[in-house]
Image (cartoon, rainbow, N blue to C red; front, side, top):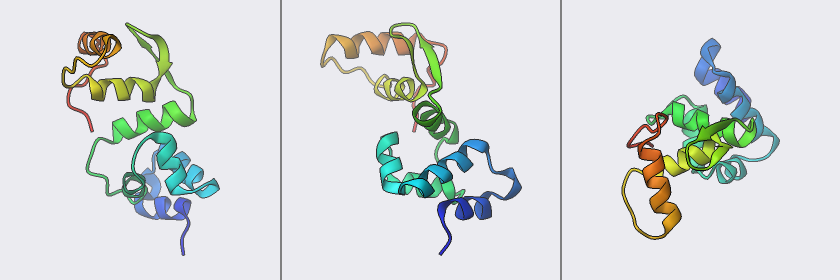
Length: 122
């Protein structure tokens, strides 16, 4: 049985992005389920990315990976410097307006006026 690194290299070939290889290495050192939980995503999403079969936004998965495992940060107009995965999560929430608390309303406004906001994300 191939491990995650071999699975990713076979599926992606020489065009494997560095972050996919990093994701595969994280899965090999732990488990796909635990990595998915750390990324707040499903294990099937991780599997599809490693197999080069993910139909959603690879850019979104890359931002989450880099925020969680490489501690990549971005500048938020409301929160200051935050991990890129936190930014992505707020963007997902900001697609629709929900008046559940003041922070959610504030972040809806901040995300929708931010140049990083990409609208409907996966």
